[in-house]
Image (cartoon, rainbow over all chains, first blue to last red):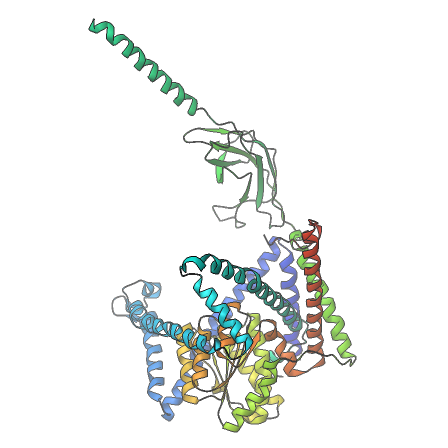
Length: 216
Length: 395
């Protein structure tokens, strides 16, 4: 029964949402919006679950003093600090600042802008170096296919650079590669993805695929 | 003598002013109004919109645009409800369904419309339209081709599932990435190192993440059998909860519930690059032997995959995000491209019912291919009827 009931709920919800897609009327819209509100409510409760998991995993490592436990401690302290200045007490705004803590100049926003964001930007900027290293590996002309990939990449990259007399030909060739073979491959993948999505949805709604559901 | 000479000059100036005045007067003449204003209910909607069409003003070259005016009575006050370009001949007067909204548009109430052509400072109004009211529809006719396609595909799936149930052997082509899963888990076992499974940045409502769960289930079952640790850092608390249940069920299926450790499936952070930093740290500290990336990925895909490559892990990726596929192909050992991500669970499980759905997918692709070839031939021959069969509207 513990297994049948969730499958029944998934089946009814899935069938209803599929029908709702083809019904533009107000009652169908209402139920869809109502379901979306439920998703938001569940998301808010799940945030508490996430906080609990984060605290538990890091606290165990701090307690056992596993290698690198200092980082776990910093994570917990950072989380508690942001929760306090965002929800409970901001030195400039006093107790329970509420939405005011999200205005620029508050402790919460200063920590976000001047500590969190620069760190995030550093992580993102790593992408530039990783693109170079991945491209180096991908474009090594070891096989015929890899060589074709290399030549294609050169043509595409050079399309943005003035090359004098050959610029026009290169431009034409690059555009042709992008519009014809590249677009054809992309569309084939999109069609496959579309079918795959419908098949997966169908398997879940019909209860054929249950592995995500846990056990009795 | 001097007086006589000035008369022609004065006369010339007067004529000049007269000419300028005539030209200016002619330019300030009101434009001719638009005609044949018709109003009808907007099709395929929730009943809070009317569609107004008109025939352009004969002076369309000099008008700046149109204003749409509405009233609930032909003798009442007409208020401007919208603007349209000089080239437009259609306007959708759409409002909110909430009665409290200032933009509320009631259903089943007659409205009259006028269209005003505007030039710089002058305007002219059309005749008042016949009344029309908005009403809701119970079927979106524009989505009929989608409905037909879904019905055909669902029927195919049910047929093949029924065949599979009867025990018919179904052949599905092998996928390199799937074949490598066992090898990758075996390698981790031999090396005594853990396996890392990343479900991406999607939520539990994303179908790619759900596909990730199904693959996680199969992989976790193997890791339970091989007694290898699996680590699943999550980006979303709901994803974490589902992943915990999935892994727990897989361990129970493998007959090793005692080996399941909840602390290995945990919430890291919901911020994109903070998550990347956390996962990269795990890869380098734990020296994971195998990394799986299955689900929705964005800009973090390459940073994750390159770090895994530097750490010397075997990597298997799968996503339906077109923009991230090249990164995964370049940086990981095996990639499940698009639909292969959705098919992976069936391949790993080898359950007849799942393989039946997979077979239906292949048949649907075959039908699509035939339709594409026929569409190309008919359209090349200027026979548009075939392409028109597939036209749909999502509005």
